[in-house]
Image 1 (cartoon, rainbow, N blue to C red):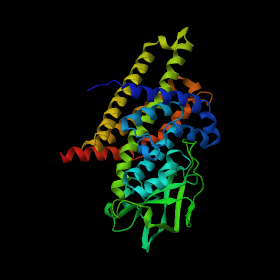
Image 2 (cartoon, one colour):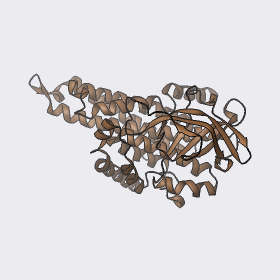
Image 3 (cartoon, one colour):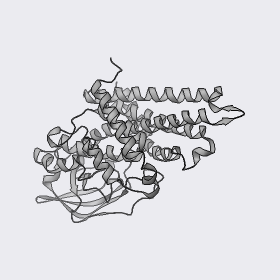
Image 4 (cartoon, rainbow, N blue to C red):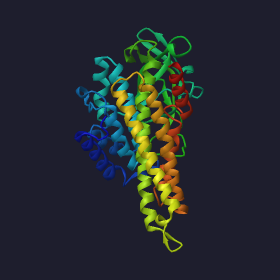
Length: 379
């Protein structure tokens, strides 16, 4: 058991941090205010391997593990949690093609995804199927060498901007065993998009409904076999949960740093806020909770890398704890800033808005508790 990062991991962390500081941090406020999808900055991240972190190097990926990814996403989110989270989703969709696709599919789609010449979206949630994902209704009916898709997906990051949509559809019976996964390309007839959603946060990434109306997708675009889709989707989410937890940690760490600087500068009652023991205790708790969340997240990542049988349980634990802790730390940092924390002159309120959704997506934190409890009771 070694809690220190290897030299290579330290280099990865430092590279990601420097990139985020130079390429994301100066622009994050504008991206948020003007709802800008920062295509060029994303492609610059791809040049460092961040668009295919755990995709094979034969198709342009970095070939890293899940712990490496957690380290990278923490640093990217330190600058802009919204943009880092989109990169996480792109990685999740790309990994599903890498892991479950044929060699022809890998060579067709991944070289342009790992450079972010093409962007990818993950399409599971529907208007009537959120936490109960296995009840999804989007149907794909076989017609010769195509599937004909009808239905819609909701809250899709990259909706309307992505080039590749990794879509979970119903090809068979009700429930999880009747779900398959298809890769739908942006120019496919019958594919359309809803209006861009007006969101509390995550404004540097487009979000819309993805709509299928007699959308014909080649059978050759199916990942795995019919009926494998729910398994594929859930395996993708194990890693996605770690990434979103890491994004919460990075944003919260930034807000703690901002709070530490603020309380040492701001004076009330004739002395710096940092001189008040009540506020010292608050800072101590924020730092302690962040460190505990990071340790759990890194342990879960190591288990996923090792393909441990309890990896899914630990990923759920880490996602639940890191996203709750991350949001709470940001909230406390805002409180320490007083009225100034509520202003857009400071970055705290942007992180506050961005991190709230981390407790909802990739499986709500209530569903994380369901997963953990189920695993415990199975013995």
